[in-house]
Image (cartoon, rainbow, N blue to C red; front, top):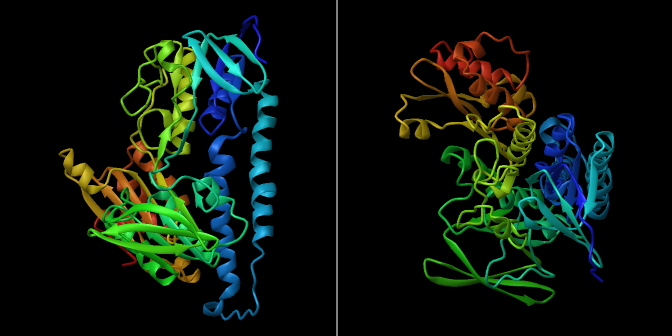
Length: 467
């Protein structure tokens, strides 16, 4: 039963404890603010619990399984390798997810951050009400950071249920499906398609446009498509999913290609066509916070809304829905509340897709640069000429550096082994305005994948050594 209550005064309140919210809370506490976090579901948010982290755990498990099945290229012969997916899921949950979420809770205690579980609803621009199962409490706040993240989009004909899954359901399957359909070939769909294929499933991706992974350049995507073809993943493009129905303990999906209707059966279907911001039903309109017609919150370069004491970060504001973007914006907002002149700078925002091979990009592509009138060129170095890649038997892919007329590095892309880690050095180069010569003159250890960056910088200078 909800009863009347007396408002409790708070200083800085953060709604949401995902990679944006918990980072904002900790930085605010480090700045001397007394912080309270309000979380609806679980500490750590989507990323730690049912997103970035558990998906990478399944991807790693798939790689280990494939290595156990076939190490013949190294002369390693193994027989009878099997997968106990229950053990895999137990490890993912208890040894990966819970350790990280437990770590966040410990950090909250370390920084004397209070956590309140419940749904937050704004009453005005200085107060909110937290709704719990059988009670509610009003709180006044000095400053508020909204970090409520996003949720999967449910499309007509595919109501989430037993065999029709969102990404959360896809991560928590009890068994590896023999036949698995993925609707949507973006980051999430392609990563989990890759993971489940490595775990033993036959996967079909239905993509509504003419290509998967539209945020990456075509030659990078071609490497993934080549890998998919060799690993039991069928990609059907220009395919519009129409309907699903239960059949024989699984699901039947109807889709159209070029106006022709077709059906396909599977054990499970996962819908990953995008996400929408969690900004509805929380009183933003009542508080007078301005939003776009897409439900995104309008903010300035410090994350501040039209209400000077209310900030928003992460998936609820414009830009890519990336965990590290949310964390970055969280630090900026927390510092802005403390009066610092911090402001966002998206000059080099890296993005990674953990497919086989991994894809990573930062800064501008050549096309993006030329569209802005910049005289840009691309320099490319193949992993086939990298000693470490050869010793890993993993040579598909390349490093590409984008430079302007002065050889300043303005962007980069990596496709291949270690792309998710290599992109950080290149992001630093873009962010710092380094010249290709800076990278070329930086001594890289041998033999490493990172040497490909140095080698590519030499290509950009017209002085290649290893190709």
